[in-house]
Length: 259
Ligand code: ADP
Image (tube, rainbow, N blue to C red; front, side):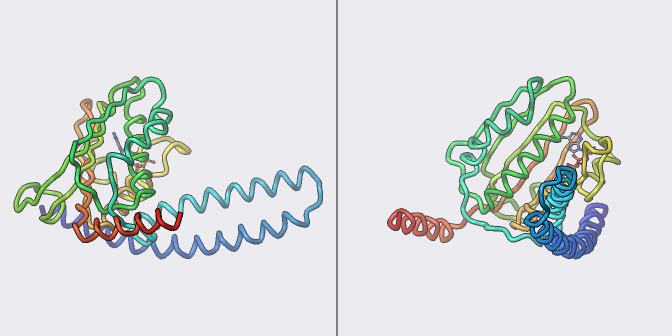
């Protein structure tokens, strides 16, 4: 438990640092992208110059994506937390997940009936599940199985040793039958920029995004992994309160009326 507390403190400090830097970089990139747009309007039709401009624009867009993931990790992004049907979100990602996994990896879902609505930001949640699926795929180069489960996790007082504060949660569990992680890799997996993948393949920001956005929602993330056996990541999302649900229902109704 001591090591875990230490790890949490370190993540907090790294988050503050990277959040500040990412925020400033994001503003700088905004200025770069704006200027390139102005350049684009005056540049004429020399194809070489147009090519260079496109390169610069693409590099800046990649930078925006990276700083976005860093901001997610440091919890400085704006989340739209609202009662979310997690099963529906996962079903809606079916095609995307199949495409991302490629042909070798089998994919199945076990979605709990009567799953509670969870407080989540649908976009961030989908990005998190996608990041987990991509990690699973990368851990199964010769094929394997990816399984996504959802379940209700009612109030616990002294249940999970690592894991969330007592309360009602909706769990999304993403398991693979891949190569797993050594204890050393596992202890660093959430650190931004920590990657064991080849240059150009991994940014080391996937799990940082997952961790940051779930924490910002008041949830938690746990990882179990065994070398040669596989990895299971659990996202604990806070259950939406009855009040939040009622408010959401009213908003949806109002939107239906104005439509
Ligand atoms: P990236 O995928 O870009 O390397 P992540 O933050 O998503 O960045 O993951 C960090 C590291 O954690 C990976 O490089 C890999 O070593 C390890 N890892 C993450 N998910 C898994 C998994 N499902 N199976 C095995 N190793 C994993």
